[in-house]
Image (cartoon, rainbow over all chains, first blue to last red; front, side, top):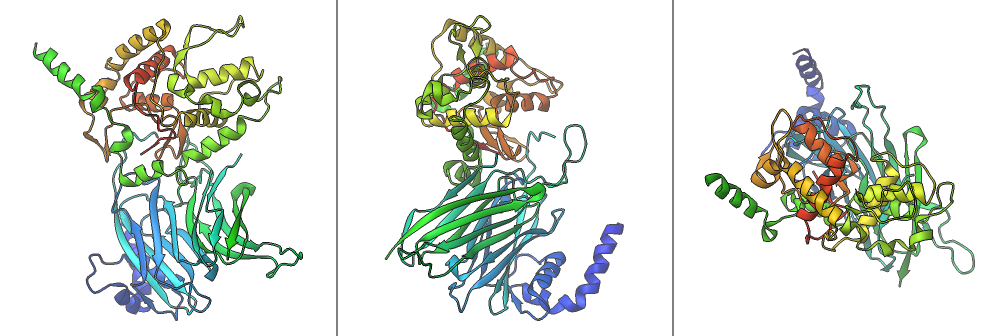
Length: 156
Length: 120
Length: 255
C-alpha cells in the first residue's frame, strides 16, 4: 500500500514533465498503454530537449515466455547507419524487474546495421521498452507486453 | 576458466555487412538469490562488453587509421541472462582484427580476437 | 484385465516409433537455442572440455589425449554409457561393475592421471563429459549387450516404475502416462536421455542426468538418492536402454 502510494506520488511529480511524452508514446492504434515507469525512464534517457516518438524501432520478443531466466530479444532500428545518419545508442528497460535497467547498447557507423540480439531475464509478466537515440538527438521507441509463465520443477 | 565463443565469417566482400555473435561463460549472479543455506549470493556481473576494430597493418608497416575504433559496446545489468550472448553487425571495409572485451565485478576480464579478411 | 489393457496402451505411448525427444516439447526459442551452436550455451562447456582434454593433469602429468589421442576418437563412447567397466589391471578398480560416463572419467583421473576424483557436478567434470558427449552427437544411443548391464537395466526399470515421495508418483507416471500434458508452463516430456549433459535454463548452467533425476525426486518430495548411488546408476542404465536408437543431441537445451 505504502509502495503504491510512493509510486503514485512519484508519477504525479513527473506528470507535468512527462505529459507531452506520454501522449507521444501512445501510438494511434495502441493495444497497450505504456506503463508510467517506462515513460519516465525513456524520458530520462532521451534527455529533456529530445523528441520521442513510437516508430522506427522494433523490439522483437516472444509474447509468451517459457522460462524467465533466458528470453531472446532482438532490437532493430530503421537507420542507414552512415556517418551522417546513425543510431548512437539503444536502451532497454523493464517495467517490473528488480532493476528497470536491462542493457544499454552503443552503436557506431562501423556497425553497418542497427540490429542487436541478446538474452534477458524477466521476473514476471510485464512491459518492455526499447529506446533508440540517433546522432541528431531524436529518440524513437517501441513498447511490448510479455507474459511469463511459471516454470515447473523449480529447484530452489 | 572463462570461455567465449565468437562466430563470424573469416572473410567478407568489400562493404559487406556481416553478423558477429559473441557468447561468454559467466553466471551473471544478480545479488537477489540465496544459496541452499539461505545466505545471499553476492552480486557478480559482467558490467561491460565491447567489440573494437583494429585495421590490419599494411605491407609497408603503416596503419591507415592508428589504434582501434569501437564497433559495438554494451552496458550490462542483472537482467542480462547467464552466459551473456550478443549478436550485432559490422561493415567490412578494411581487413583487420575484431577485439572483444568483457569486464565485470571481482576483476573479471576476458579478451578474444578474430581476424577478418576483406576482399575488394 | 482392465489394468492390463490400460498398462498396454500406456506402453504403446513409448513404443519406439512414438518416442519424442524432450526438445520437441519446448518453445521455438528453446529449440532454436539448441539447434544453433553459435548460440547454444552448452557449447561453452563443450569447448572448455575439448581444451581440458589436452592439458596434463595429476601427479602423472598426463592428459586425456596422451592415452586416447584426439578427442575425436571418443566418437560413439557416450552412446554406450552406462556400461560395465573394463578391467584396468588395478586391484582397486571395480571391473565388471556398471558405471556412468562421468564415473569412467573420474576413474581415468584417479588411476591414470593420479589426481583426486572430481566431486559430482564439478565444472571440469561436466566440461569433459560435455565434450565427450558432443563427439557422439547424431549417433543412436547404443547400450552394449553385457550381462552386468542387463541386470542394471532390469533393476533400473523397477525403480522407474516405483512410486516415491509424499506426492506418490513414479517416473513412469509422469513420463509415460502424463507425457505431453502441462505441468506449470512446461509440457511434461517423455523423459528420453538424449541430450545430456544438458544446459537447463532453470539452472542457468550445464548439469548432469543425475542432477535432473535428483531434482525430480525432490519435486515429488522424496529423499533423493546420493550422487552416484547404485540406484541412480541403475536408473541411468534403464533410461539409456529406453532411449536406445534415438539420436544423441548433446549439448541439449531444456527449460
